[in-house]
Structures are given as structure tokens and as C-alpha cells.
Length: 144
Image (cartoon, rainbow, N blue to C red; front, side, top):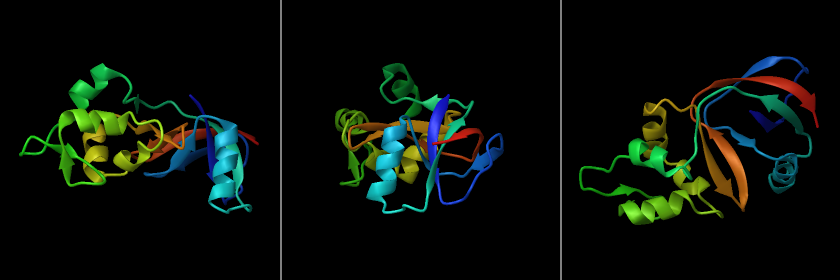
């Protein structure tokens, strides 16, 4: 899978690197470049990388049915409240503006990792991004 990585480090083309847990990767180059501006990190570079890992897609309903489990009280994790009903949880993870907020919750990430996924697709400012759940290897193929 082709993705974009922002890094303050200079990375050699052709190198296989380990991307740590909780790093954001971008589906589109323009989104990665915009993130450098938003984060005010002009000294960083954007790289094209290829990964081969299982990634959870919350827009695939069948994956959701098997991935997420409620707390003992029957409610699901939420970033604004302690917990919410299933319908609101699904609304949060499919929100095209800020589903990243939900996927930054440790309880949610743990459930996704238990299903064998290495990352999760989510949305931030209407852009599709990937958050790594565990360290993954990536082949650096180009500096952008």
C-alpha cells in the first residue's frame, strides 16, 4: 500500500524503516504537505513509503461488528464523554471530519490490535489518514 510519511529525519531512498506506534501516515501527498504547514514543521520532509500490513477500515461494517466490544456497562469508548451507545460510537468512527479523535483512545486502539490489525484508517479535516497501532516496516521509495 502506497502512503506518505512526514519525517524530520533524512531517510535514504530504498531503506526499510520501522515506523513506530501512533504515527500518522497520509493517503495523499497533498495532505502530508498540508500537515507540515499545520504542524509548522518546514524542516521536515515527505516520503513515499510502501507498507504491507493489515489495516482496519471502520467504513467496512463487517469489520466493525467483529472488532469493537462494549465495556461491561454495554457502552463504547468516546473522546468527549466517557462512553456512548453503539450507534453514536459508529457515528464517531465514521465521521469524515474528526474520527481521528476516537482512534486516539487507547481502549479503541487495543481492540483493533487484538483483531490483528497494524493500523487504522480514519479521517481528519476531511482527509483519510492512517494511524499505526504497532510498529510497522515501510520501504521508502521516494522523497516528495
